[in-house]
Image 1 (cartoon, helix red, strand yellow):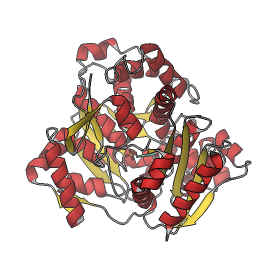
Image 2 (image 1 turned 90 degrees about the vertical axis):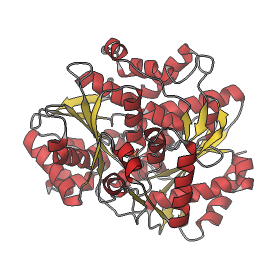
Image 3 (image 1 turned 30 degrees about the vertical axis):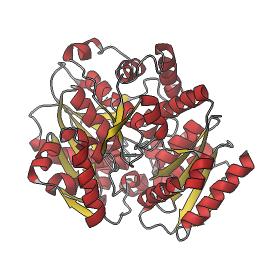
Length: 484
Ligand SMILES: *Cc1c(COP(=O)(O)O)cnc(C)c1O
């Protein structure tokens, strides 16, 4: 049985179920498996014809023992998690005419139209499955930069074993994303809009750490997390890399590149672990917007969290890439004491300069770029004019980064560009890019589910960022008491 440990504490090991239900480890670190499974080229060849769900079943089975989740139950948990997708294929691949070596991976066909649906539905189903079996309940605290909140809210709504609080910062999410959260018709999901926060979801992540530290709250509400600190999210996010590879590779074994719009590094961490498991990857391209914390880390080895800037690709307006640490653990030889020492140094100094050797280890097979707002909008406009394809601002950041690093990639190697949101979540950005009023933008600028949400009344708590801890604590306790 594979056991799980914190990346910064080698002493305590737990089973899969404990790691998933806890979210993060007692020392605050991220859970990782003692050992990653490996996948051979023969195995990849056998998987070529599988659907997304069938492939997810094979890959997740490498991580979860049958004694913990039976084969039939796992199949059901996966199937129900993709049953509400708008596309029967779950994930859609679309080659570009204007760049024949590039294929767009559309990860946004889930119920809330972003890549977060890919793993969230499954993780929430898994939580519910474990909790029902134990006869327990949990409260999920979810900070969002725009897409995690809607995905978690949708997945949790109506689940007896779960209650969720979605926190978002006013001005850091689009009206469409906001309505996806505030118009959910359910009793077990609550939304809190925070006014006056300067650093958006990074501030809210801090708030959640403080709430989780509160003994009284923790006792009463039994917190956990389905943010990508949760191992199960990252585990599920390995699957779309394998799937893309099997769809796009002409010969199993040839290297393929992946350009990924990145904020918290959760999506890319899934990719990096897929590579560790044996997936033939040429390069990963870390695509940042002006929030360039990851690019700085990959270019100069300096880890420094900066003030968050508002960009058109707002879901990656993040300056603390928490899942980078999980990747770093694997990239530097799985040594918990190293991670612990780096985290301690960072806590004291507020920044961290990695040494040349460490940097070489984590940079292997990675390129990175920070894309500014003008490049983002131009990339959207050019792709639309060249081939009538509307890409969302996050996909555009990835495509711009990919085209920029092209000379550094293995010659003729195919590339995947991950499109992580449906453009209809960002109609104002689309209008800006195409220089048209929203009403004259192409049909993909609107989505029927978002139009329906416009007709529903909103339900939301509101709170100033100053004094937030006290107010949120009171609100959580009151709503909990009313519900019991
Ligand atoms: C969350 C998100 C990302 C970034 O994913 P990370 O795992 O935080 O790097 C990119 N694009 C969209 C649309 C997202 O919602």
